[in-house]
Amino acid sequence: MASVFSKIIAGEIPCYKIAEDEQFFAFLDIRPLTEGHCLVIPKKEIDYLFDLEDTLLADMMIFARKIAVAQKKALVCKRVGIAVIGMEVPHAHIHLIPIQTESDMLFSNPKLDLSKETMQSIAESISKYI
Image (cartoon, rainbow, N blue to C red; front, side, top):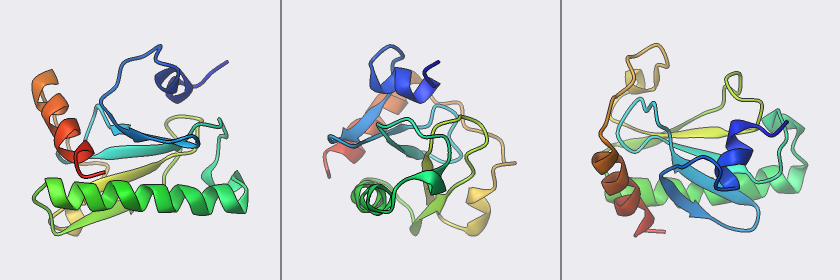
């Protein structure tokens, strides 16, 4: 059975897409910790990030860096933090989270509830820097 992320890649579930290439896909997290919180996933469905082949993992980090650079240009943040948890969806993914302080990355923090218009605006502002 395809993961929710595979369904997003296939266009079966809508998302706020940031960027994609032949191997990877980036989109806004719909339950963000901060405005601009993105997920980066490989198009190949593999459950655990560290089960990716070395070259795919390395390429994923290079793709993620492009997204993080765009986030930093588009949003007000000191850094873009990266987190790998991988428990909630059985499809390898990394979180790119624009932060002001380390506490912005606490997954126990309340998630933001942003309007569709706000999410679309954020996605567009990040995408224009890719």
